[in-house]
Structures are given as C-alpha cells and as structure tokens.
Length: 110
Image 1: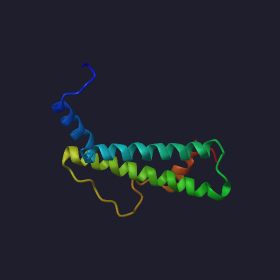
Image 2: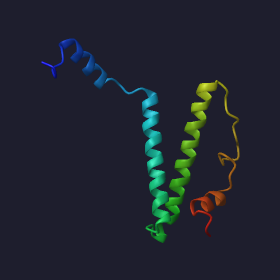
Image 3: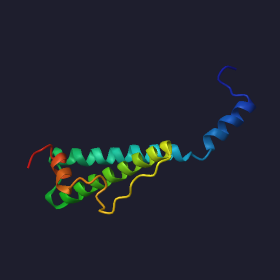
Image 4: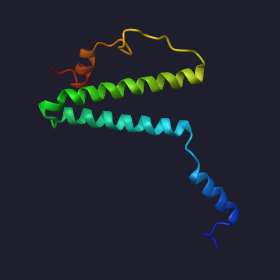
C-alpha cells in the first residue's frame, strides 16, 4: 500500500529518528530558546508587567542572554574563518557600558 514503509525504509527512518542530534542542531535549539527567553523578558519590561522587586533580575536575564548569544555568534564565525577572537580582559563582552544596554532596553526612555 501507498502509506506503508518497506522494512529497509523503516530501518533508515527509525535510525534517523533515534540518532543523536548533531552539535549544530543543539546549538541552533539553544540559540532559539535564548532568543525566546530574552524577547519574553524584554516584552515583560516594556509592557510594565514586571513588579519592581524582580525588575533587576529581568534586566540581568536579558544581559546574560545577550552575552551568551554574542559568544555563540563569535564562535560560529571563528569556526568558519579559523581565526581566534581577541580576548578581552575587562569582562564587558562588546565593551558597551551596562547603562547603555539598559537605555536600549527601555527604548531610550529614562
């Protein structure tokens, strides 16, 4: 019948379905989840749904997600080009002061 799989095709299908995910697919999933969490936290702040007691934690969550996403993109570029990135010792990632990120999250509002 048309909808049935032959035994050979079934073995290939089952093997592919149960195969370990490649590191690339894991990285893509992690990146997508981090972007989703970051966007959720930004939306909560911008919509005013964050109580004052947890506002700072939301901002830290956004900054942490941004830093990890930045590292993922840098490492992807390193893998493609073969060049090692310059290591910064100031711990700021892209050198942007913390106040600038907060200002950007608020959309320029104080």
